[in-house]
Image (cartoon, rainbow, N blue to C red; front, top):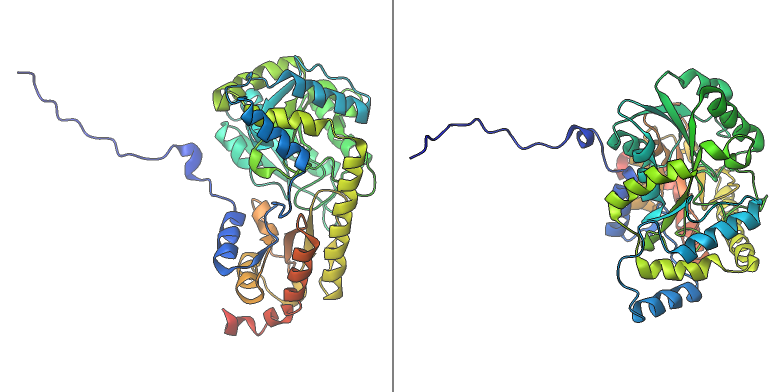
Length: 406
């Protein structure tokens, strides 16, 4: 009989890479809003129908048994369509075979891109406020996020702030325009700052352009990768969720130079193998929509934006008017609260409207007396009007009364 060896059992534990990560605050806000029956202007989820053409194309693909794995890099016709759209907009040609990869959402595209280029302890500069997946993705890849705050009150990119954050370990700068949560569309001067630093210090740029078709003042704003010397050092991440109101489809794409694309495709393959085949077929229909679709999209969102901005300002709530995307920041500082998370929860409980606290988009934010919430206007006009009617009672949350309503 063999000898029984007493072994000290190792306790089961989580990996270090996730132990210090937390789910974003908007998950908690969404759950509370649902529980209380509040109007949820927190999450970027449209409450209106996607275009009938894209839905019909998805149904047709499913009924035609397009239900097996697609090519890992994505359906060729879709990649060709994306290349054609980029050429039409910017007069820049991309090779659909070697530079475009279809992913399971822009979120996976960012993760695959970071996995492809970030080595352990590499640093990635993130401009804050920032979408909540950026820093955790860097951490999950073994890198270190380095935070640079956009300059208030207009959230501008400043050269000195980025240069002060550089180190020998800096690998990339991650930028998002149109910007979530501020609604900024960065100007050519700001993008030139990023381009100069990337070229001067040998850095990559990763640009999240998921809201690129939803812009209000300039229908074709500048792109970082169109600046001299930047195409070969830029990874472009985009998707179909926002432009075609199909956030649940999780369909995106990455455009990058061939050598970077090789690595991105390897990471993508081992993350998800491939994006959903029938939804890629439907996206082929969408990417071929006429220019009138995109103009109508912008016009419709401009109406919603203006409705919400004017309604909030009428109630004495100042706003940063967004230049792109479908979020805006509203200022509730006059009510005297110093905790935007607590205020957001009380807004749900007392007023019946949900919004996301701006602090949820920062690693650390100074308590300077300003209280900003992010509102989504990817909602029907009826939803927005109803929310504004509820917000007419906002003075119930005035400082001095809050202790009695908690």
